[in-house]
Image: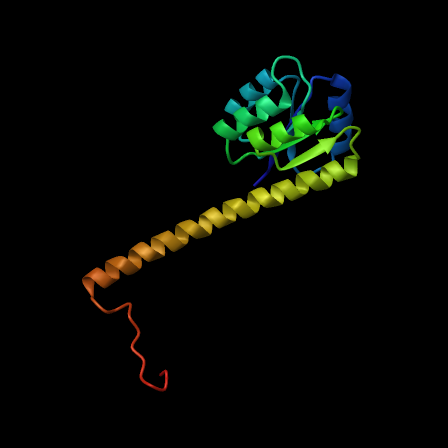
Length: 162
């Protein structure tokens, strides 16, 4: 399955640099100039990872990622900022439950690795959910068998363990 990453930054130069740097990556990349534009994109596309600048006009990155957490809880959230303060980091972590807090200027290789790790995390969460559903279904099947044939799910062993 093809993954999708959404990058939200109000500065066209930053979006252009990231677009050039990440163009070779094996995932689709969408761009938005504001949190409001990004929310519109999220209603139309299934996005696996959102990377947002913190300082944007209108809604801050922390506020935006908090909205993303509420509306799209399975989307992994990363904040990218040139003005990292302890207060903004704490707000982003507590309100947006972000995956990573990166500072500008950002090493493109570090960003690429962070995105790949985030996508791996997303895949692991999906696989975990799939396996959990299988376990639940098997548990239901065992309960049904036990109701139809009492004792069928119980193993009796002798003193030797056989």
